[in-house]
Image (tube, rainbow over all chains, first blue to last red; front, side, top):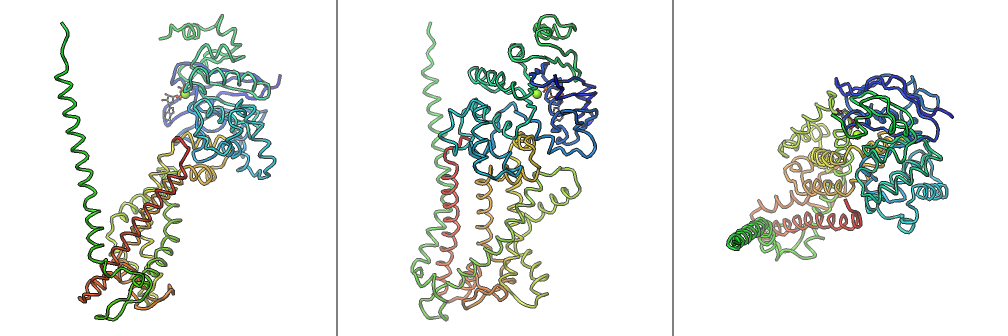
Length: 252
Length: 288
Ligand SMILES: Nc1ncnc2c1ncn2[C@@H]1O[C@H](COP(=O)(O)OP(=O)(O)O)[C@@H](O)[C@H]1O
Ligand SMILES: [Mg+2]
């Protein structure tokens, strides 16, 4: 299988705070990879290094290499903007753009990338809302504000928004931690569907969720990648003692 | 034994009513000055307030009737041009202050200049424009007045728009960046539409403030007794006209000064109400 993301010796800092230490791993096409670990261990920082969002924080630094479909995204003359179009991101808190309609929330990525053909936009918005399992609920009110939806719907809207620019990779940072159990279940179902077309790296603090939805799991601790492997193996016979302690809840 | 708490309940509800009453009383007391000013101004100027007052030129001292139509037109032109300069300029500075990395020297200089400029007395702004524009061009002009007003508007607009942009959570910006949208487009196409309502409120306040200023116009736009829409010539304005009437000593003119004040108060109030109305309509249906 094709390697879509390859992380090689990535370290990251906030000022002098060293939060990622020489992290390396690779992700294959159409895999779902779960990132788990205690809060503050650097999970968010790691995925923000994969779409060059880390560098937007003041005083943030990064070293190492990240290959996206074979291209080093931190190579010379690589434009962060074009990289980000190929790596979608869904955040912890649903964050539709305020002041934009449901339709525009999904269309904006394409519009601002220069697509103005109404028919194409219409088709693409419908397709992405379908993929995000939201079309049925919103097809009659596409002009309403994105913020008028419920939390779970907003999060699916954000997924549709990310999918609109057709990224091969989707990053999700605890996408269900602000949602109720029903919305959480619908997002988990969605991930199972999406993995047919996109490679997904998802941060979660919910061990059952990681076990349910992921093919591989990475366990992080204090900025280091402690263990990475098949989810079934990580959860049944972890190699490292720290991993076992964490997943059995006997941590610290 | 059951504990009887009804005594405490009574005491609590008594305290509650007292606090509510006090707050209500203070609220009414707070709006009293506004109502008093409006009614007093209306009472004093009512007899001079008619159609002629807002459409005609002033009559010579002693004669009855006449109006301040030229000054209303002048104020409209001066404030419009001031807004045309001040709004884009102030907005740009506000956006810069909120969206650009905070530790550059340019940021610190701007911060300092804005802080000073907000508190500079408006007459000082008038003098500066007088010295730099009026003296240099060898003429009082409506445009010089607009310039002075725009200088007053810029820091107000910059400050309010900066605060409004800062209220937008960072994860909204990041969501835009993460879509592969360049930063400047994130600001103009995503953040700006999201806070349009609040921004407009801030802009209207600045326009209202400028419309009521007298001091910066006294030696920039000066005044004019006749109809004029030429911004390169001296131009009448409502506040300066009120000032001239008020110090003139003629009974008719003084009544007209009150009537003019009433028009000014109404303008500011209507501007506020209209913005409020528009905004309420716009935000209808959105939860945040
Ligand atoms: N913007 C920031 N500025 C400074 N330190 C930060 C910032 N964001 C996160 N950190 C620090 O970096 C470390 C890792 O954070 P994060 O990647 O968010 O952890 P996780 O997502 O695993 O909870 C934490 O110690 C956190 O306090
Ligand atoms: Mg996190």
